[in-house]
Amino acid sequence: MKVSEILRVKGDRLVSVGPETPVADAVRTMAEQNLGSLVVLRDGRMAGLVTFHELLKCFAADPGGAHREPVAAVMQATPVTASPDMEVNDLRRTMLETGARYLPVVDAGELAGVVSFRDVAKAVLEEQDFENRMLKGYIKNWPAE
Picture 1 (tube, rainbow, N blue to C red):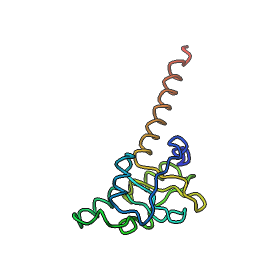
Picture 2 (picture 1 turned 90 degrees about the vertical axis):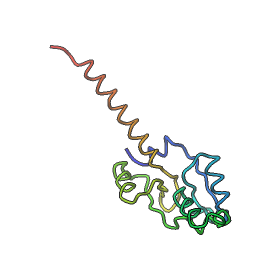
Picture 3 (picture 1 turned 135 degrees about the horizontal axis):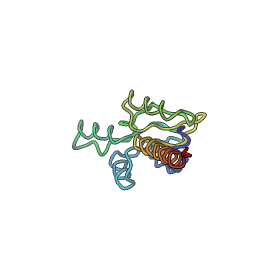
Picture 4 (picture 1 turned 30 degrees about the horizontal axis):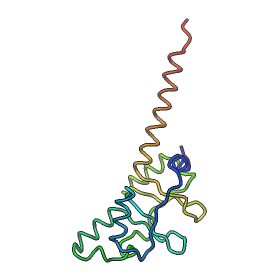
């Protein structure tokens, strides 16, 4: 299975903010949309990625004033990325080795979407369920001699 298949199943919903968006607004958007990450776009291109991890670190460092910081001050400016033709096992390995829970998917320099660790787990589980059903059907219909 490839990353492009996960994106196809997941859909093309992509929520983003600008680099000057206050952290408080980013937190509000993530809470309202039930998201763990937001792509930061500048002039229509990915400038970075902000996840709940960066936001927690920001609030821990400045509990009283963090909400006024711009997202650009806390985002990952160069997040680890994936490509659509990457195999899911390679994606899982990359996520585990880097500790990234969210990876932007970039195709020929253009943002194609974001995959989360949850998206990967769901896709792998569905693939395994399908394979199990196929194997059980094959075994059930095995000719008796």
